[in-house]
Amino acid sequence: MSETIESFLTAAHRTFVEVTRRSPDYFAGRPLRASDPPAGSARAVAAALGVRLSAVAAREFTAVDDLLDRRRRADGTYPAELVDPADGTGDSGDTVPAGDWERWRRRQDRRGAVRAARAAHLARAMDHRVARHPGRGLRYRAGGSGPLLVLLTALGHTDEVWYPLADRLLPGRRVVMWDAGETGPSGQTWTLAGQLADFDAVLAAEGADSCDVIAWCSGAQIAVEYAHRRPAAVRAAVLLHGSYPRAATDPSSAYERNLGAVCASVAAHPGRAARALRALGGEAVPVPLPRDEHRSAVEVLARTPPGLDAVLRRPFRDARALAGYSRQLTELWRHPVPAAAAGLPPLLSLGAELDRVAAPEPPAALVPLLTAGHGLLVGATHYSMLDRPEVVAAVCGAFLDDPAAGPPAAAGPREVRWSTPAALSHPINPTDPISPISPTDEEVTS
Image (tube, rainbow, N blue to C red):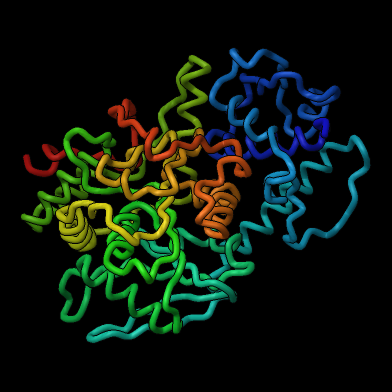
């Protein structure tokens, strides 16, 4: 099927929104480039987005242009949301006259706002339940019906990080999620054993023998441990931007190295927590984008999505929280990645090309466990479930619907690059850039 102006503009609009959320004036002096756009696209892009479209060869693309190009290559295997924003978000149904691209843009923005509002209020629409085990009552949220899907968040964080993704995964599934436990009975640090006990308690409360899992950041290591210890309880799992203990030869991010050093220091000397918070500093102020267009395209895509500071900085909200988080993370990272064993469920890893929190590639010890391979989200960050929930939902949904088929490489979004376990290599991650929190051990211990 030949590409239409509207399908081209849908891909351009998604890219425009993602970029301008991070830098509102990014396109003020920069064009959007595409190879062989449909006739009339330049006028449509100018009218709808106020952006100049340049028709160029692919070799001239920046990272932003490459992302647009990947999004143009949609076909019938894509979820409707990636092709046509008319996705059941309660749109008023008004029609847009042919060629009225300004009105088309307003309709897309309205649909996006409705969907975002629905996700933001998802917790109110879900059941609030309690799972009990000795010495603890765990509050969790549950919604929908169908196969059980557990969304396992990172240490120190709340289930709020899942709302946009959960909203897209709920149809046809029973989705459960909870805040990562911080303290247990008598106020002691909630260790890995406690996290696994919480997992058991939720499955028991749901009357389930098994579940699917999507786990984020340090939650990915907890998911791997759970799958290793309870292989019959996990049907399949997606490890999203996992952060794991790493050997010296593994790729690691500057953030992981520095955070590990800070947390080890604070865990051993809790009195250093207040000083560590001062070292962590206040909210990061984005530095000006580089003049070079290729570097500026990478940097704008690598920026943390705005409006998430309170959510993402929760482990660092005060000295007491940091001390507890440091004990938890240090204890978790003392557990090596389990060895491959017979009977493990299918595990799929998803990283992000511009992740500046966790290394985009998995550690060598994890590779033998990744029976479904590893995907890399092009131009994405550590927070893709918040920033690109439609893409993550498409990948996770396709895999969990049929884990035996392996990664959804053929039918999945083109903005994911796939590697099989055999093809995975481990170059040292070259990105040592600015991250929202980039402490150093010297800053805390000096």
